[in-house]
Image (cartoon, rainbow, N blue to C red; front, side, top):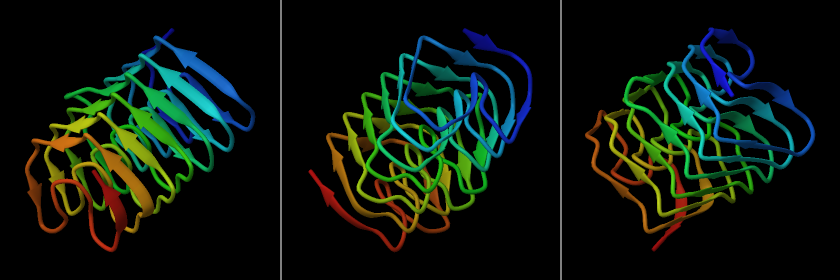
Length: 178
């Protein structure tokens, strides 16, 4: 499945999901505002596998916009052309909890209180074997700001971090990093 059109308040493939879903091998090429490149917002367990976002995203996530609980992303990429801004994350956007990211990468530049893999205001998330190569302004290479009780394992950042934050996590965060 592929989306080439622009989307507002939704996702490139699925707008908003209130029940479990599984998305495999999908690509978003369109721009998205207030949502996600693949799934706009998820309020329950959704899994994305082998998905790619090539479109620009504002206020959301390269793969899943905002997720309230138990969503997973595996082998997903937010591509270099997909510049994100305003409270965004390369894979997950904001307000995530109890979500897992495995073997994912962000290549896009991200600005304004955002994270390379997970955006801001997240809790109880796990990120394994993932990387950020995009330049980040005002936050962290893996997690954004205001994230608590999260775990980062075998992750790395090669992107430049400017104006605040750090290579792995942003500001006002509590983490286990291994």
